[in-house]
Structure formats: C-alpha cells, structure tokens
Amino acid sequence: MGRWGTLDLVLRDNEYSPGPGTDLLLHFNSAIPAAPPSDSGGEGGPGGQPGAVDESGHYRVTKARIHIAEGVTAMGEGAAGFSGGDAAVHLRALPGALLATGSVWGDFSIEFWLYPALLADGEQILSWVGSRWMGGEAVPQGISCVVEGRRLAWSFENLFARPGGGSGRISLRGLTPMIPRTWHHHLLRYDSSRGLLEYLVDGIPEAVVHTTASGGEGGALLLPVVGDARSGELVVGRGYVGFLDELRISRGFVEEPSLARYDGRTGVAVSSPLDLGYTGTRLKRIEAVYDSPSDSGVYFFYRLSDHWDLDERGEQWKPFQPGRELRDARGRYLQVMVELFPDGTRSTSPRVSEVRVVYEQDLPPPPPSGLYAAAEDGAVHLYWNRVNEADVRGYLVYYGDAPGNYHGVDSDLGSSPIDVGNVSSVRISGLRNRKLYYFSVVAYDAASPPHRSLFSRQTSARPAEMYAAEMHAPETHPADFPASEAAQ
Figure 1 (tube, helix red, strand yellow):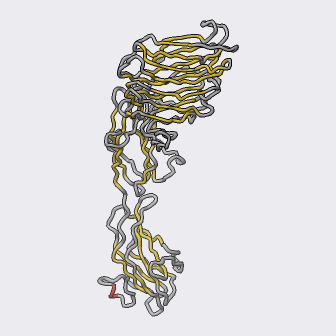
Figure 2 (tube, rainbow, N blue to C red; figure 1 turned 90 degrees about the vertical axis):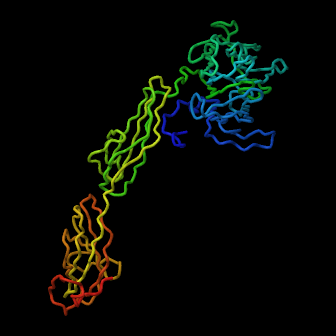
Figure 3 (spheres, one colour; figure 1 turned 180 degrees about the vertical axis):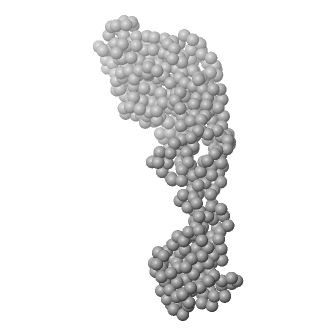
C-alpha cells in the first residue's frame, strides 16, 4: 500500500514465475481473489482462499486455514501466516504433478522462505503420505519436513526405490539452529545423475546424502517414484507457527536460488503520452513525491512534442530534477519515464508515490469581434476588430450560402476558408449577385500548427449590380451602409 492509500511505484519483487519445469508455485500474495467454497466440507475451488493458488496448475487447493500477511513478506505482496493446530494448506495433486499416482521423478527441488515464531519441535512445514505396491502389499510412502532442535529435518520414507526393488528411509537435518522472527531461504535439491540429495539454507549447504545402495558416491541409484497404490494430499504448515512464503517445487536441480528481494536490474516505468491540450504548451516543471532509502536510486526523464507519435519521431528522453523549473520545454504530448534502482544489498526498493505535471497551455486567441458586411456589385466587403494578442498571425474568412454552412466556392480569392493574413478588412470578390452569403471570421496564432479561435459572430450580405463597385468602411455604425444585411 502506498503513501496516499494507493499503490506506490516500486521495483518488482524477484518472485519466481511458473515455467515448464515448475511443478508447484505458491506466492501467497494478497491480490489473488478467493475461490467460492464448495459443498464438500468447506473445501475451496482452485483458489481455496486469497493467496493460496498454485500458479503451475498442477495442484488444487482443497483447504487453506491461513491468513495472508502484507506487512511480513519475503517477496511479493503477501506471505502465509500459520497459527498452529490445524492451520494448514492442503493440496491435491492433479494428473501430471510430481506427487500424482505413479509419477517417476528425475531431478527435483523443493524451496521456500520461512519466518518461524516458536520453533517448537514437531512443527510440520511439509508432509505427504502415499503408498506403493511391493510384493503384493501396499507399502507406505511419505515426505516430511519438520522442526527438530530449532533445525529443519527432512525425511523420505520409501520414496527412493532400488532398481531391483526395495526401499527405505533417507533423512537429512540442518546444522545451524534457526533464528526466530527472521526470514531464511530453505532449499532441498536432488541430482538424479549422481543420486545427490542436498539441503541448503540461504544458499549454504547444511546437509548432503547420496541416494545409492551404498549410501555413498557410486553404486546403484535409488530413484524417486510415487507409488501407484495411493497418493494423499500435500499438507503445508500443520502445527507450524510463523510465516511461509514462495513455496516452489521444480522438476530440476536449482543451481542458484533467488535469495535477494530484487534481482539488481533497473526497473523502468513509462507513462502513456499525456495530452496537454494544445500545441506549444509550456511545460513549467514536473513534481514528484518519492523516497530512495539506503543507497537505492530514482531517476526521472521526460520527452515532449507537438506530435503524438513520439517513438516514430525519435524524440529523445531528457533528464529532469523533480520540482525544478524547465526551460524551453514546449509541446502538446508529454511522456514521463522513471528508472528505479535497488540498494547495494538488493533488499530495498525506492518508492514513487506521485508525479505531478505543472504546465501553462498556449490557448487559442479569442474570436474577432465587430464583424460587419457591406454588399457591393459581385463582392462583399468585410470589416472586424483586430484581436488584441501579440501572437495573432492572421485571420481566416469562412463563407457559404446557408447559416453556419461555410462551404462556399464562388469567390475568386478561393474556396472557404480564405486566409487573408493579418488584416482587419477584406473585399471578397467574385461572388454572385442577388445571392445571399453568410460570413464568419476566425483568428489564428503563431503556433505550429496554429491554434484557431472560435468562430466570430455570423453576418450576411447579398451582392447586387445596384451597388457601387467600391465602398469604404463605415465610420460609425453598420447601419450607415444601406445595402448591408443585418448581422445574425
């Protein structure tokens, strides 16, 4: 949650994304919607509850008695909080999952982040129970990861089978006591080519065993196989008190786990082109509310043009300091880019809470006033008041044969509209006598492309042979011109 109650702009956490080798992935993020409960004992659908969703699609969450914590996370938007007792996440393997009945494994890895509160003996982090047929009997299988003496102890019961039959228990136990209320990364990984089963905490090896008939390097390998008799549910966190985040099971040997919250790359956010309304708008400054704790960093850039296709025109990004006045920055379309860098430990992200653009629009000029029309023989003489703005560069005369319909083509000065330049009167010649014409004038400024004013008040006149060939502008009032039509 951001400074103002909305989301801040921060670096993306270094969460895993599901891929071809992902067998199970639980982010426990708070943004995931809950699935509605079914009628079978309160079990949920694929979601189960907010945050309890397998991103790989290989497991269905059948029960999730946890709470999603947003303030205590290893990565992402949330972590699973467990309160002991029956609080747990139950997952049922679907066909194709490693824990599905009859599955034969190769390389695999199991990893998660753990934030224990009590470290009481017997707290279960993971547990699974199944069975396989051996000699006509169903032999139990199991996987467990539990707290023993403030360490994690792993046990695999009858999962690793000898090529000729038979199996047994394989166990590993950490060396270093865990510290309560501290996040640590736990990884169990298996190399099937060597029969190497290794347990690491924060990337440091804690225990190693070889799944061979001799228990050492070399010899017949014991291969992991889920029996075809039964596969139970994978249960996460039964009896555990604390938080757990980013649980992943992979069909592969994880060489380098993600131990830093951020991967060290630059995070870039680019706004959509912002329309400031008018070409030539002056960009005064860009303000920002941001924070860069530790030695993290934020850099700001902008680009500005009177044309919307900023990329195609190759507009270059310019750095700016938030709040400082900008010089010679004019345009209609603005883009802002923010670059975010984590700190040296890749554990802290900068935050951008707000970006505010301060600009001054280059508004169109007001419409000309006092438009009068004097009819002549084959022409109409128009007069108007100049627009009192320094950047006005000229006027466009619109004419036509119906009110508001300025599509005239009769004048020998050209079709409507006629650019008459920076004048306050013009004789529109080449018109048909006894035909009523309607006129309006628009001012334009020096912008590129120019801004045009609204239409002036409309006026009309009817040329005729009876009028003198040339008339002068009235000195007092349009009524002094007896041949002029009343303005509308």
